[in-house]
Image (tube, rainbow, N blue to C red):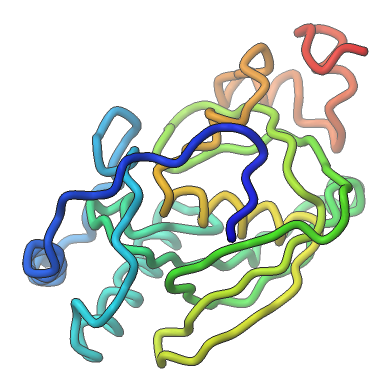
Length: 224
C-alpha cells in the first residue's frame, strides 16, 4: 500500500475505459507535443484509473514514447499521464541532468535511467526523511521544500506487463514518490512547507545552495 507523508488521495476518476482510450488516441493523433496540464485542472486532483488493458500494446507503447518526448522537451525528470490530461496510472521517469558535485552529494542525486511505471505503489524503507526544494511541471514557475522518505521500495508493472520491485534512495526516491503521488491526485504542494514557496527566479537568486538551512532561517519554516 502506498505510504503517504500527510495529505489525502483524490477522488476516483469518472473516466470510463473508452473515454481514456479516446483521449489517448486524440493525443497521439496530434502533430505537436501536447501542453502540460497546470494546477487547477481536475484531472490532477483525481485518483487515476489503474491500467488494466484500456489500451492495446501499440497504443501503450506510443503513449509512453510521447510522454518521454514531452518530459525531455519540458525539461523534467518525470511525467505522469494526468499531466497530459489522461487519468491513467502511468508515469515515465529519467534523470540525466548534470548538477554540481556539492548539490549531488547533499541530495544523494545520481543519474536515473529512463523507465516507465504502471500502477505503482511505494512504501518507506526505514524512517529517514529528507527535505529539499522541488518543483513540478504542472505548477510552473515555483518551487517549495518537501520532506520525503529517503528510501523507498517501489512496486509496479512495466509496459510489458512484468511485475517489478525496486529500491530507490536519495533523489531517485524523491522522483519516484513525486510521480506516484500524481497518479493518486496529490501535488507536491500538498506536502510542501508553504513558507518556503519561491518563484524560480527567487530560488535561483537566493536558495540554490545544496541544502536548505539558509532558506529555513530566512523564510521561517521547519523551525525547532
